[in-house]
Amino acid sequence: MTPHPIPKYLSKPSLLFLSLVFLFALIAPMPFAIISPGPVTNLLGKSIKISGDVNSDQISSPTGKLYSLSVYVSNPDTRPPGIMILEAWINGESVVLPSEVVYEEGETTKSANAQGKKEMLKSEEAAAIAAANFLKSMQPDKPLNWKVSDIKFVMKRVGGPSAGLAFSLALISKLSNPELISGRSIAVTGSINENGRVGSIGGIDQKLVAARDAGATIAVIPKANCQDITFAGNELQVIAVNNLSEAFHGLIDPKIAQSLKCPA
Image (cartoon, rainbow, N blue to C red):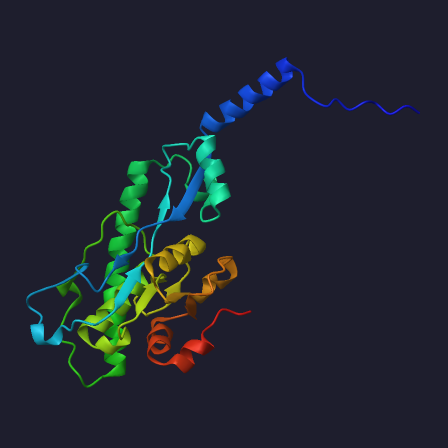
């Protein structure tokens, strides 16, 4: 049986056609969303505004940095061109998902931004209540001397609930325990409820990349996100927590931190 000969090259019309298809794929809008590492915010800087009603002697200036992490997500109104999708796949620090996985049907940039702001405001309030409850449980005989309404967080281009745990730890550090950070660079992500329960968030790999790039040496994350991590940055010590108490004690005591690793 004589084998069918394999052509060594494509004909010029076929090659031209394939080239045009490839070029079209690079510029054509695609129904995908790109999630990339976003900006980090040092909450021990100017991101927490504390009312003048709070005694200034009670407000400390902790040394070190406590970073809140975020991600960039392409808008629901736009479809990135194929070349952006290809670049995201190649660089390895972004994730590409079908738009319907990230956004609900009919969602717009305006509605997504409004929902993100709403969720962030709820997160700020829950974080302040969680911090207050935690401090009262640690020192029941010591007056709190501040109210939730005394606290305001200022963050640009960020929405959603995932900064809640970082907000709580920043408040505890500034209003009660400055030694919590102790000169270190610590990155934190995770939602939180009023009882201090820490919930999972999206984009964990991209947030860990952002933490590494910001120079953080410790990342405090929700334990529920351990199963989602593929990031292999050995320079980051990851502390995986279920609640605010674990996060606090993990940052205070290195032995406790060692016990709060993600399962192997």
